[in-house]
Amino acid sequence: MKSDIEAKIEYQRIIGEANPGGYQPVRFTRIKYKASPDTHVDIRQFQRGYNDEGEEEYYPTKKGFRFPEREFRRVVKEYALMPESYVHPTIVRKSFALLNDGQFESAVLQAFKTIETSISVITLLVRLVFTRIRAHIVMLKWISLRHSIELLWQVICSR
Image (tube, rainbow, N blue to C red):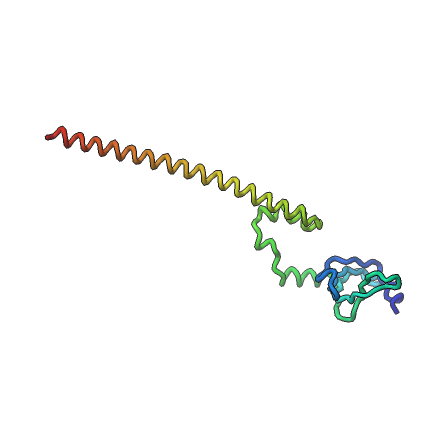
């Protein structure tokens, strides 16, 4: 039975996994059948077990379903919340290409670097603004003091 199914498969690649390393992970697999021009996505629960050598192995269960990849993409695009909508565009631009390539550590470091650079720039701008505000306050105090002295001088002179 299994060899009959394998004979019909052109290729099969795991594209994602939920609960990896767990007792019953769920795998997303892209499958291309020889008889079909379309690729399919199979979402199936696997059962952890052991092969004849005693090594850990995962076996597919009947819990799952398969449908054309174009339908899978349509459903994901239409109903899934994409993380780009919750992340600042600069981080999306600098990190998401790395995420898509599976370079997770580099993507996280790049995101932190982007945040750190942005905070440095904002901090510098805030310092410049407050320095100018302080300069204006000092200047206003000086003008106010000078004006007060002039008023006092006028009062003294008019007597």
